Length: 133
Image 1: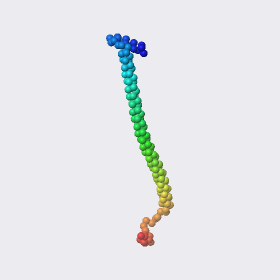
Image 2: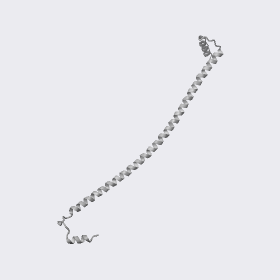
Image 3: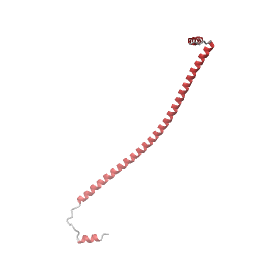
Image 4: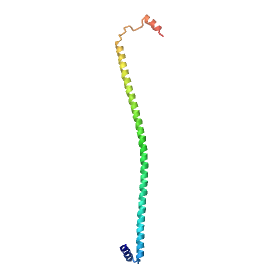
């Protein structure tokens, strides 16, 4: 420690200031206290910023998790709607196939019906139609 006081006294002498060994030690201790205090303040600021960043990251993570849950719920709803739409499409395809088969059956019955050479009703047919209500 004495060599530090000697260095401080010599530097003060170069600047034209005469210091006692006690004053040089006090000056060195004061400078050391300022450096240590500055380092403590810088460390405290760093810890404050790190804590603030951590809290901000936690808040953002919670927000992202909530958005993720909402998107998963929407995706599940869309999947349910897709399954329902596919079921409707399959049902409609079956109904269309059944309708097409019925149309083919009806067309076959139409084609199998013999041609009627009579263009008009006979008197007997007219009486039968008149009685239908």
